[in-house]
Length: 255
Ligand SMILES: Cc1cc2nc3c(=O)[nH]c(=O)nc-3n(C[C@H](O)[C@H](O)[C@H](O)COP(=O)(O)O)c2cc1C
Image 1: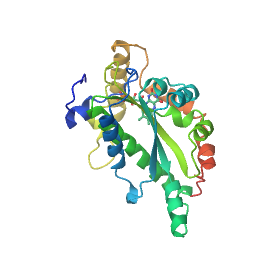
Image 2: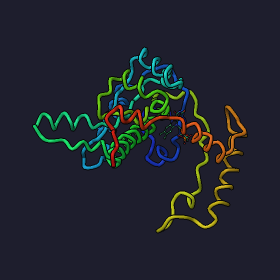
Image 3: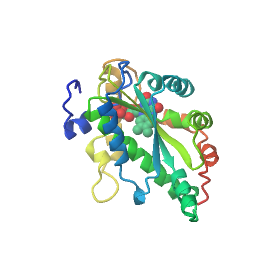
Image 4: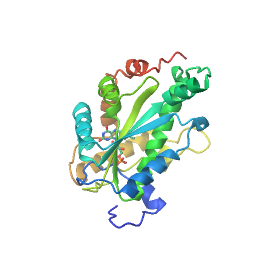
């Protein structure tokens, strides 16, 4: 995916060669690249055109180092910029008050939570695609949501109705890691109804593909499989207390 000149990558290369990159040159983004990423974020499709998301662009190095320290992910300090993608029902609350309209508090429903989360996630993908097309490196940082939501919300001054869905580190790549093999098409794209024949066999073949990849890839190798490794992440995730964190931010889901 090496791409150092100024010509944007084609859509095909942008989408098919993207990978998460975790090592960056210590240099800022060009003004034009940063502006293109911001415009791409703004043009994200959203439910109802409600734009139930906001983004905090973090370039302040001291703040990035604090984030890295709390979250335990070095990409937050070594990248040029961190974008924090937020589900945001504060802006509509502000607008409703300004117009004297009653606000039903949609963020207190499961669907409101989903809507804000989907909007923020799509906005992050817009940023990933824009940055990748300019030859930049990106890495989503979900741990920015889960590790210590109370401290992160305070550090970023998040009001009620706003929670951090995911952070994204963006920088000039210092390395181009191998791409992870992904599940084959018939495990991902089902035809007309859910499922594919012999799903367990196909999943076990993929599990072996990932074991092989982890054992032979460039850089840090491991003996991780896919199934056991992912279940390990889920086991760790069982200890997160996102419901309490969401409630503290006003996502007091009732139905
Ligand atoms: C929502 C989300 C959260 C993620 N959180 C992290 C993270 O906290 N740290 C990290 O190093 N990578 C993180 N990743 C990157 C994944 O590990 C990566 O996408 C996955 O291993 C597949 O590799 P690829 O992006 O190179 O295709 C995250 C990705 C997504 C989509």
